Length: 239
Ligand code: NDP
Image (cartoon, rainbow, N blue to C red; front, side, top):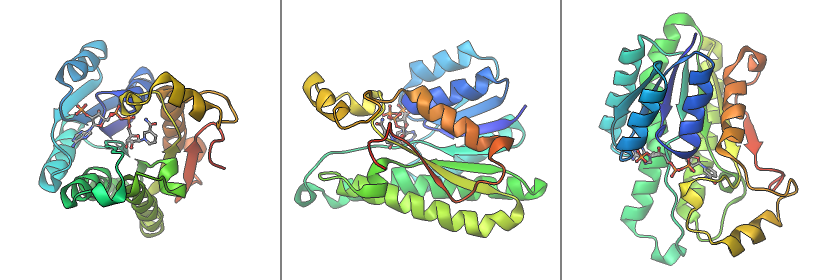
């Protein structure tokens, strides 16, 4: 039984990750901000799941929430930095506040939570960090300059952490989803979704579970020689 901390676990991909580990019998503490009802539902559904409310876009709060999650579980074996936001805007319309919020949520929170759990990992010379990036961090997306930049930086941070922490027995990888069926994409109408699907070799958008399965694999002993990598889960949309 492992101890797993997941940021942004109340909905979408994060909730699927929480379920994947909970159904395996692991103990999971997840961090969420607004979705109180969904967080409560998950905790009622699984007796091995705990919720911590915090806004991870505030660095001090992200660190404190990760610390609390580790305290609840009595340790930590795996950290999944999943909490994230997206925004579609022309670069000239992106405000300083938009840019900062994007970086604080998608990048700085992952840094803060990682920094908080690493001393826990050092105690056992083991531990796994998985950062949820995006195919747009790999190739860039028009009208998502700040989102793409935050995810590209997350990939860079993953590689640097893998190099630094490998000697301490800690593995750090990214899962990089393509188009996944969550609230984040609810702004797209049927026609746009169809045009996106036309560009996906596997001819469907992904399910949150597709990403959760990749995270589960990377956290497992089956991936014990994998670090510093970006595992793309995108149906072949970006190769
Ligand atoms: P959702 O919008 O469905 O869920 C986002 C989750 O992050 C929620 O649990 C939300 O909590 C949490 N969250 C957001 N901001 C904060 C914050 N400031 N503090 C704490 N929690 C926060 O997104 P997805 O599930 O689609 O995305 C999950 C991750 O996957 C993100 O990092 C995203 O960039 C990435 N991704 C998603 C893709 C997709 O197509 N869906 C594609 C590529 C990458 P709450 O609701 O409680 O506020």
